[in-house]
Length: 177
Image (cartoon, rainbow, N blue to C red; front, side, top):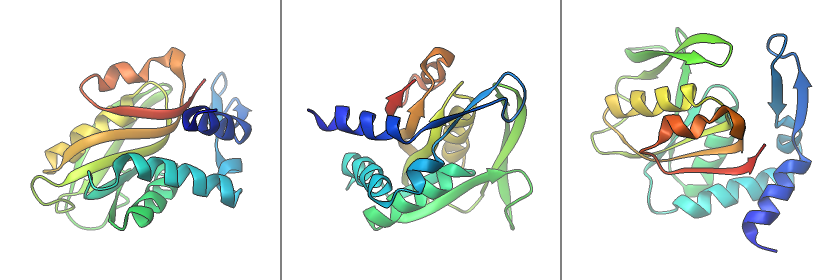
């Protein structure tokens, strides 16, 4: 059994469906069972870190579940972490962008001084769905002066084709649903 197959099976055992969240008709893919299992969480963090050790300077986590995984990956790599948050949540000067969600629109922000020019960034989130949040985050990080090296998510909802929004990006997910 390959490491890829093992990670796919591990993640698959730790994901649950929450119907009609955050609104009717949406089936939310919840990975909090993975977070509550220390060995499983550790395996996921080490797996992500193994692909990027030495090739990134900072990990960027997308609010909110991307914070959890991203901060853990940054710790494992011994590098810094930068949060990308919903509008109005960061103190100080920010850069922002608006983007479409599968069920509405939103705005995200990053501190304007979060990166020095040329910083190599890994963007991390829990789920890649339509790709709107991921693409907006990558563009925002690059506007702030960093270079996005790759995007990582635990789960990819394949039929929503979010990967298509990241065509010029290196993308890795552990489980495609």
